Image 1 (cartoon, rainbow, N blue to C red):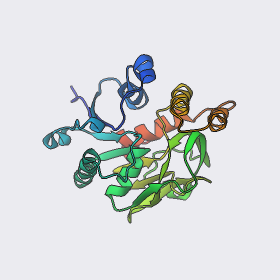
Image 2 (cartoon, rainbow, N blue to C red):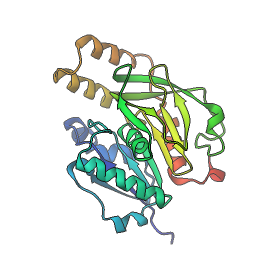
Image 3 (tube, rainbow, N blue to C red):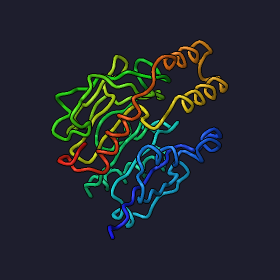
Image 4 (spheres, rainbow, N blue to C red):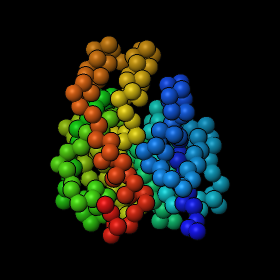
Length: 251
């Protein structure tokens, strides 16, 4: 009998009431996108100072770093500790998928530069352009590489400078770095492949209620999903191919 494969999720955000009520928390949102039957997915709420023992990292096949309402360039204890773990996982040649905050923190840990987004925040369905010639040879996309992909965006910071050995995989009219990889063990995405329309709309409503955005910004954000959906199935394929398959076995 094959040994059960284990994956670890670093949760850098608390569960919203909507996420708890609808999905049982963000852990389940990620596992529904990335998980397969027979796997074990463990999560640690790093934003609350909950971390795995360093000696236990070896037993995991792959890791995911979630989004966060915190800035990846902050020097709070848990963020600095997560940076150290990213460096350790790099030394161990482990697969690490970085989403939004995770995408930015990996860039920081590897020597890139992260700051407040120069063109402002994004809270909407975005359309990003794939650098098709950069996708090979570690082609997590499969045989068909699209020119563009739609993905839900929810961030106010961006990667300004990539780490030295990173490869740009996607950009947009708003941000120069929408997706990048480092060797075969880091894949980083500024958008949220795990989000759907309901999660985005709940975030927009909460941010609006908190006075962080204006009513017209909220309406414009929601309008981006009136006639379009995120390419969630394609993002699922990319992320799962990265975490679980060797390049020669991609589908």
